[in-house]
Amino acid sequence: MDSSIAERRLNAIHGHLVPVVVVGAGSHSNDLRSNPTAGEFLCEKGYSVVLPEKLQTGKWNVYRSVCSPFKLVTRFPDHPDIGTLHENFVHAVDTFRDYKYLGTRIQADGTVGEYKWMTYGEAGTDRAAIGSGLLFHGIPKGSCVGFYFINRPEWLIVDYACSAYSLVSVPLYDTLGPDAVKYIVNHADVKAIFCVPQTLNSLPFS
Image 1 (cartoon, rainbow, N blue to C red):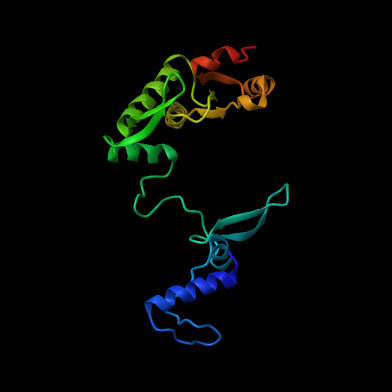
Image 2 (image 1 turned 120 degrees about the vertical axis):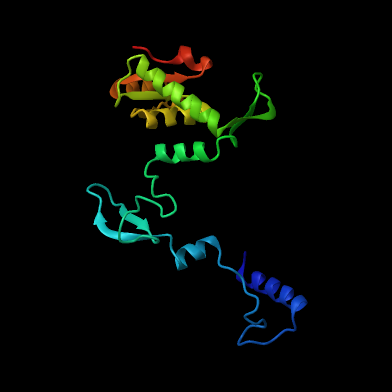
């Protein structure tokens, strides 16, 4: 918004609230003033600081949060026992077990219906079943597991299973074409792939 227009609107609102007081060049007091925009706030306050280190390749800088410019944060004071995504999810399941977590509303025919929810506890149970199932079928720790579907609850749950059972998540993007998927599968030595039935036949198995 043009600054003069914003100033006029601010003056008009101020006139409805308190008597107009001439302060310097403006016609409103410090009782009412505009807040900085997101861009202005970013420039004034800043969310990160630039570290003196440089990446070995490329022109990019190394940034760190202004809340902790001198050291990396590995634990939060309120939850010193949480240091990994796996521990964070376990804490969420224990704390919010019966709360709604993941919702879907797409029906079998592709139309939008009412939300069907999965609780944190149900997601935790499925996570454990998937992870232990992979180990039972001979997928060793450290193996790569492919994800061949778009954003959906199953994507998150399988990713949690990989975190819990020391497996590596490898996203497979069908938008890049079958050749790219085949290259990723072979290059990463993917041991198992999760997908929906509709995309099973399009997977490269050689």
